[in-house]
Image 1 (cartoon, rainbow, N blue to C red):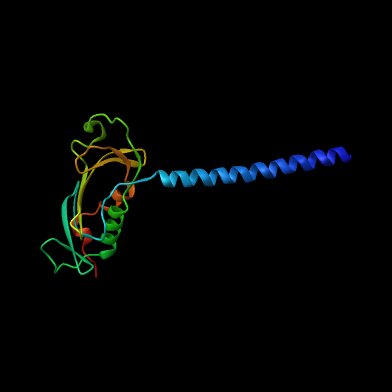
Image 2: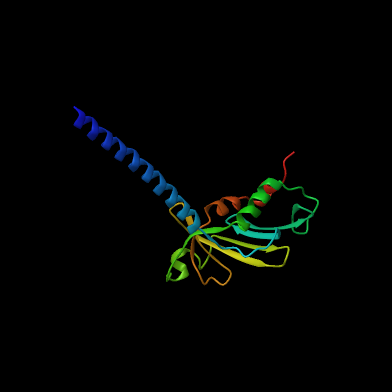
Length: 171
């Protein structure tokens, strides 16, 4: 009976040790995945303009004194929450991964992108983001000179789905 108790205690200790090890490995893997996301933008501060094109058309926005407006129209009051989210998504754009040796842009829908975003920050840094076909829950995208192809950007796409009229503040 004493031998069975010892064996049981050893097995129990091994089981507890294995569970602890698995939890550490899961945490390590999650941390590596978060670090694997590549920052893509080059902005140094807040944005001062955003122009985006989606399947509904083109929208041009300018920011003055912490408020977003349609370009050339400071009288129409816009729902700032949509635009602040859009700005955050652009400033924080990351890629899940970069494609190594990508094929021609047309295979990713980047020769005629579904979405185009041009943003300029307060320092004058500018970036154009081209978004093509979806890949599972993410999208293929490229920036500026279209030299690299990335996978990611699904939350950015969600933030630019709005038509111009949907951005106007409702009373």
